[in-house]
Length: 629
Image (tube, rainbow, N blue to C red):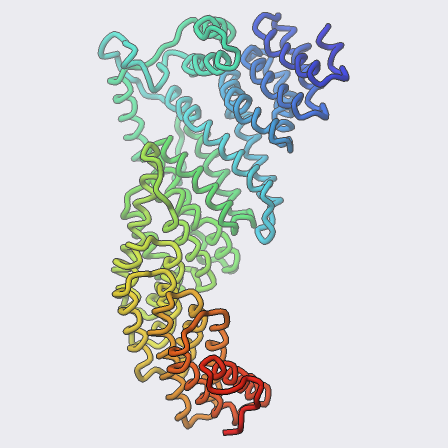
């Protein structure tokens, strides 16, 4: 009664004390008082204007929840769920920290204890994800929305081991007799199937409460077991775990998720129908899946799921369901709908599911994807090339991870598979259309791979393709070669690229020359001065001289305009008088001669730049007019 009267006290410290009292009294209060008075006080305080009070509510709701038994959960679940969501979406960082550190883990564990995880908690989280993803505009991502999506999937990831423990503990298989008397070293991993899965995690929730209250762990654990009807904790030894795991893996390896079948294992069916399939359909329907950040979040969750549920489940269930959705309905009359679905599913499948399988699975799928998009076969089209680029970017941009995370270790190997496939096998594909797509993917990879990978793998592949007889492929290689020049510091590598540019320009048609000038102009400010002065400027000078001798007037003018743009890009660069005198001034004079056949604005601009450059080398007064030539 005293706590109730202090809810509206003017001092915020007093209101914090009220919330803390509810958490501290939870262990000692009667069952009826826990579910009524204490919960009602915290519920009223959740709308307090002061973040410090709301943060205290989150912390002490976490202390109260373990003491609310299963028989009360059915009546109070809706109220507690609403309290959880209100605190979860609270804008205050102080409240968010309290929710992260205290409430989320205990609420999740409590939902297992009261048998509400599968029927209520996970569906509620999926509902929140669906609402958040529906509200996200991929063209205008709001940081807060993305953070909320990340947090919901973090909770789902936290639940995965509990979900799988529940599936294993309710499996129709017999773990067999124990090999020996249980010891502390062998008692781990899964609860005994002869005991409720609640007993296996009573220690977890008791320890979590004890950590926040500095209370005695063993005493609380005993009391919580009494609440949940568990008088002892039973676990399996290593032999039983191995025996049961082997039976489960054997069952899953022969499990055909797409074939109609009945199984007494309803917990496994729940993970398929209400977990994986629901997530898959959510991905298909959401416009926000075009956002790389959202894709990364869901892919990370899928990697955690496959890692927690094991390789047999990943292949027989997750991989099979995704692959079926990606390949089905290619005969339908609405190809746009099919392409949209695939564009949303493929990146998540490639980065989220395939890392859990063998390297050959990614290699085969990626090979098929590149060739199908390039050749526009099996319902794929070139309009999905941006999606393919995003997939390669996600695969190649993975940094070194903590070795304790098997999913991340596997993901790092996916990068190696991707680079090997593109830089070796597909590089020599007989179809020019496939090789063009490979060059487009190189353009993405050149900004991501490490210096060593660029020099040893990507550059040799690019040099090979830049000598291709197909004009489109040759032209497509120019841009990534130029990007290389801005990233590489070694002189011998830069010399190789310079020679390759010379090879490309040798007898090059008009379109290739224009692309070379365009790329050289784009990179001229970002390369090393020695490469600029010793490679780019001499090449521009040779192109300028050769262009002045062209008999095709239109092509001559096109090249002249592109050259002038490249020289304009030199603005702000520090260039020596000797270099200016040797390359820039002669080129501008030649360009000025060509400009006389073009419009006055262009002719004036070239003449002005020439005056400025000649003034740099002391040839003329820049204020004087340049005589006609």
